[in-house]
Amino acid sequence: MPVDPTVLHPMPEQPRVVLLKPLVTSPLIEVGEFSYYDDPDDPTAFEVRNVLYHYGPEKLVIGKFCALGEGVRFIMNGANHRMDGPSTFPFPIMGGDWAPHFDLVTGLPGRGDTVLGNDVWLGYRSMVMPGVHIGHGAVVAAGAVVVDDVPAYGIVGGNPAKLIRRRYSDADVDRLLAVAWWDWPLQHITDHVRAIMSGGVDDLENAASALR
Image (cartoon, rainbow, N blue to C red; front, side):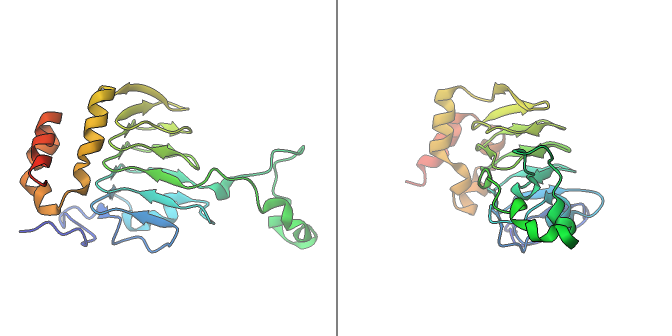
């Protein structure tokens, strides 16, 4: 049976797992096929419980085949407060006589879109701060707070998250990025899923050569 990227619950016996592409409705969130979120409480509330302070215009972009563990949080640019004066408190949002000063809380500098590459694994209750770019194949440890960009196939952890190691050498990362297995036709991925999950870089290059 072909694998269907449009079903909400890919494992009907595990309602805690949802595919995000058929779930999200916000025009500010883009998700690639087969990226999923796992939560025993209410995974379908991802847009409001896991993507916070998302008032735009910056986007959250999640690539294909990403695995998001329970409690992952994306803090978006709307969480910013002024820090150029004595107080960081956003008085105008309380309304009343403070409302005319709303310009003080709009137009704050942002860090741009938050972007996850393809095949990224975000561990349990990790947090991604505004404007961070996480490269293809990266792994974020449980509980990590990611404040800076993560290189492709890097493993980061801690608060603030630091690079622990690279999953592959620089040369092999270049080869993996050139292969870009996540862009293969779905049937080709299916035919070579064992190489993708447990093979080496040579195996993926051999599989990719069949597409030429």
